Amino acid sequence: MNDTPSDAASLFAPLWKRKWLILGVAILVAVGTYEYYKHQPLKYKATTQLFLGSSEPGLGASSKTTLSARELDDQVGKINSSPIARAARVRLRSRGDIEAVHGTAIAAASPTSDFIVITTEDKTPLAAVQLANSVAQVYVARQKTAYLLSVKAQILTIREQIRRIESAPTKGSKGTGTSATLEEATLASKISQLESDLSTFTGVQQYGLAKAQPLPTTGSPKKNAIFGFVLGLVLAAAIAYVLDRMDARIRRLADVETIFQTQILAALPSVRAPVVRPDGRRLPAKSLVEPLRRLNTVLQLGEHSEPGEHEHRSHVLLFLSPDPGDGRSSLIANLARVQSDAGKRVVVVEADFRRPTQGYLLDLHGSYGLADVLGEKVGLDQAMQIAESPRDLDGGAGAAAMPAVGGVTTVVESSRVGSLSVLAGGGVVSNPPAILAGERMAGLIHSLAEEYDYVLIDAPPPLEVSDAIPLMGLADAIVIVASIGHTREVSATRLEQLLQRTPSARVLGAVVNNVPPRDIEKYGFSMSAAAPRRGRRPGR
Image 1: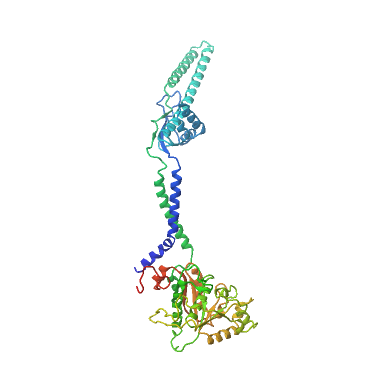
Image 2: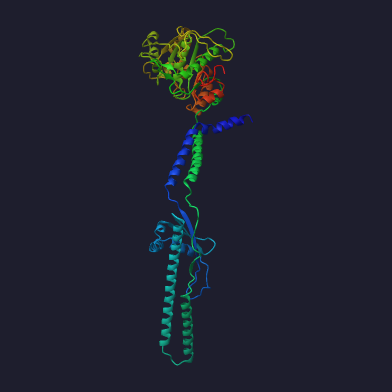
C-alpha cells in the first residue's frame, strides 16, 4: 500500500510535466472550434414522410401490395436524384421561396414499413419545411403523372381491342357471337375501372406536412467550444502519455539508483548552460556551485570508506556515462574548479580522443596533450597545462565552510592554495583503446596520483566505444554520470551489466544532471543552496 502514491505520481508525472502544453493545445482547439462555428450559418432540420401505397392501375385502391426492399431503394434513389432536386427548386423559385432553394434534402427508406422519410436542412426552420414539402410534392406529382399516363394508355389499348372485336366478321355461329359479347363486356368493365382510378390515385401520398425542429442542428459556438476544449484536453493528454511511455529515458533519481544499485552522490539542477562566462572567465553556473561543493565533500568522505584504510591517499576517479551528451565533461570541468577552489591539487586527464571538450571548457590554448605524451612526442611537463583557478565561485572570499554531509562539516582552504592542471586530449590517435591500455598510460596515472590530490579522468561512454574499458582497472573509483530526460534506460542497464562483468574499480556512486527541483527535494537533497526561494528566511 505504501507504493500506491508513488505509482500514482509516476502515472501522472508525464501529464504534469507537459501540463502547460496540454492546456495550450486544449485552448487552441476550443478557440478554433468557437471561431469555426461562429462563422458557420445555423442549420435547422425538417422532416416529412411519403407513404408508398403501391396500387396498380385497374386493380383498385384496396389491392395494395407490400413493396420489397429493392423497390423501396429504387424509390429512394429517384427522390435523391438530381431531376427531383432541380424540379423542387424550380417550384420554390416560382413561389418566391428563394431562401429555401439553397438547402439540402435527403431521403431514406424506413426499415419496417412502406414509408420514405425526407430530411432537409436549411438556414431557417421555415426554409427547411418549404424544401421538404417541395421535394415531397414534386415526387408525388411525378408519380401521379406517371400513374395517370399508364392508366390512359391501358384505356386506349382496351378500346382498340373492343373495336377489333366489333369489326370482326361473325360466321353466324351462336357460340362465337356469345363469346365475343362476353369479351366485349369484360373489356368495357375494365375501362370503367380504369376511368374510376383516374380520379382516385393512391399510389404515393405525403403523410402530413413537414415539421421543423425548433433548435438548430449545428449547436451554439459556445457549447461546441466547450466540447472542443474537453476533447482537446483528453487527446493532448493521451498523446503526451503515449509519447512519454514510448520515450524510454530516465525520468527520476530513483530510477538511476535502481538501475545502477548505487548511491546518488549529487543531484544537479537543470541549467541553461553548466559553464558560464560572467567576466570573461569560464565558471560553473551559480546554481551548480553548492551541489558541486557537496559532491566534493562526499568524495572526501569516500576516500576512507573502505575497511582497514586509515591513511590519506590520492583519489583517481574515472567518470563514465551511459550515453553521449549526459554532461560528463562539463561536470568534470566544474568539479575540478570547485576542488581547486577548496585548496586541492587537481588534474583533469582527458582520455576522450574522439570528442575532446576540456580545452574549451577550461579555457586552454595548448596544442599538446595526452595523445602526444603516450606517443612519446613530448614530455608530460610540455603537455600539461595550468588552468587559472577561479576564486570565489559564488562571490564569497577566503575559506568556505562546506555543507554538512552525513553529520560532518568540512572546512576547506582558500582557493589560493589549490591548483588545477589539465592534460587535454592532444593529437589524433588511430587506435585509442590500444594506446590507453598500454603500460605508459598506467605509469602516467600512477605518477599523477602521487603528485595530485585528485586525478579526474574524462573517458567516452564505454557502450559507444571501448576506449574507457582499459581505464576501469587503473582508477581508484568510478563515478557514473547520468542525465534526467536524456540518459536512456537501456543504455544505463547495459552499462551496469558491463561494470558487473568487467574487472574494474568500485563504483563510488552516481551524479545526476538536469534533475527537476521537485525530485531533488523529494529525494532529500536541499534546494536552498542551489536555488534560494524568495521570501524564505535563512535557517528555515
